[in-house]
Length: 178
Ligand code: FES
Image (cartoon, rainbow, N blue to C red; front, side, top):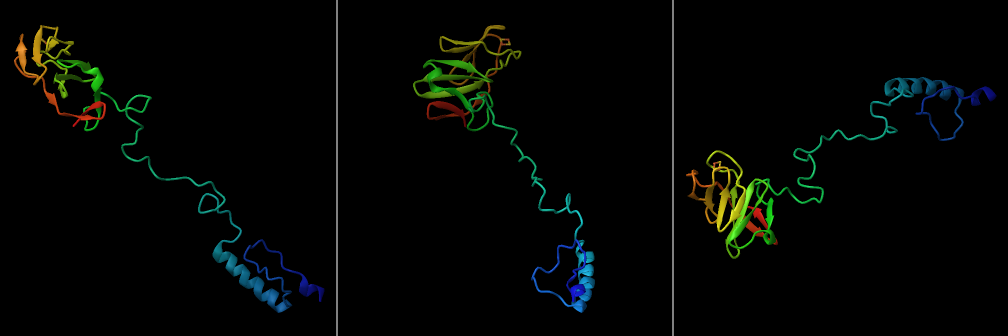
């Protein structure tokens, strides 16, 4: 009876674990069935690199489009010269009433209390950047063109076209692109 209790050597993990001692016929029949099962199920084969569960899980998800990292500086604030909707162009506190400030790609002005405007800082004469806001005008010192802080229209000098306007709105303490 000891030969009946000898279990066939197998590496198949699909063996029964019920603990019942099989008869010789059951062992032989079962071994055949297990062998077939193992062949069909590729039992004992190394599944690493396919669908093995012991492998670390990797994501095949691509980096989401447009997620090249936060825009702006290390403080997490958006760039101040982007020009897109919602982008901070300047803090209200930085724009003097009756004057303006040059930041990023824009000159931001406050022609009247609480009214803010923004214009391209590129002079329409020959493309210099305007360099200052003084006495109610935006000045390009390349050839001394002057532009209105209210609408960017040329006021003096060789430039004869207005500075392109960027629509803005106030968002809390900031002036942002609209
Ligand atoms: S480029 Fe500005 S005045 Fe000529």
